Length: 252
Length: 252
DNA sequence: TCAAATTGTTCTGCAGAGCAAAACGAGGTA
DNA sequence: TACCTCGTTTTGCTCTGCAGAACAATTTGA
Image (cartoon, rainbow over all chains, first blue to last red; front, side, top):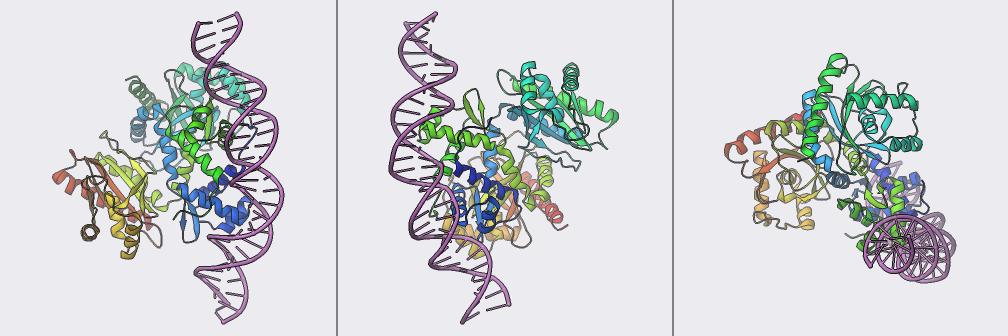
């Protein structure tokens, strides 16, 4: 999997950039150089390059990641057909349920959150847009797995494994296969604290035309709120009807 | 302004990445090499590097930008204090007005859209999050200018100029100064097709503590819908009260 | 079905660039 | 004022990013 040859300078630039992105305050050249293990001089040259490209800014002798980075992800997402069809429906799902609703897509056998809408209930999941999350630990992830062909699922499991994230994570391949079967039968998937303790999720896949990658939507929130009929009927119903609306939008 | 020394390899990597980001379909090595003017071999090495970093994916012998790029911008934004305070209020502003509402911040003398919420009315502005827009052509941009000290405004105008984007753009420095004065007096700014023909905007600045960069919120939409009392009283009132709510949130 | 063409990947050699270390300059502090 | 610290620039060396060519793997066309 690890490629043969890489460009060291690019690796170094991204190490510096990612360090800045992760920091909540401006950093100086000396500190960055120590962090990434390069000399002050080169780090300065890299920062100058990133600055000229518009991904880094300087505020009184210190550097910080630019908000211009938002444009890259936003543009990638704009080319995603399912996003244009799903956005307002996911927004609406968050509004009517009050919870956080998401759009996930599959990429290289992992799930990536492509969009997230916040409902009135004030709660924030542990991940943000762009985060890679194993498919077997979230409701939308399992829904996507259930929508894929068996051999593709096997490939993914072979490559990614079934690491446990919490005590509830499904780590047995046969158990997972059984769960995928019931997901296919019911058209809905649940995540009961398998990704994060205290967090419950509901999801369903979006059937896409041709060779587009898998996609799914979901709703998640604190386990204390998502229980009983509210979870299994109200929210589940909203998720399914939202998925139907997106399907309609996609085939227009 | 243009720095002294830059890293060529980094420049090339980003040229390739940006080409992929701008494309709505997967691209091959040969095509990319022709586009950026490098040999096939090096482009392949760069793609391999970007792929290992998680910003590029391969789908049957062609490359495309990864949704993982969303994470970078999202993380930068999460460190923006005003974003956490403003998000739900901007969401709410979009909902009650029905229009698109935005959060802008100033960076290096230009405005960057940091967040955008869509109201029920189906309309999409010409720009997305992360886009850099001159301060003098949008309502939130002018609101931010009005909130800055005079010498800072002069510096920005010296550096960025007052280029015309439409026939309505303010290109005269004295006219702009007069407008900034009335914005300060009224606590509200308008953009009447100065950024994009047929688009009207309303904005007001968010007063921030200490040395944080300027920020402003706004609402924008088609000129056909944003007119008369609806624009100048209803929407304006919602914008101002939203800004007040954000201020309260910020000083908690 | 087979050859020709095209594309992705690897290899080779070298000029140029990335890198560490040191020197320089600009703020800030005691 | 002198010292210290940090950002910036310079120097020289080594290594690597780069072009071009060769190779491999598909696809195309007849």
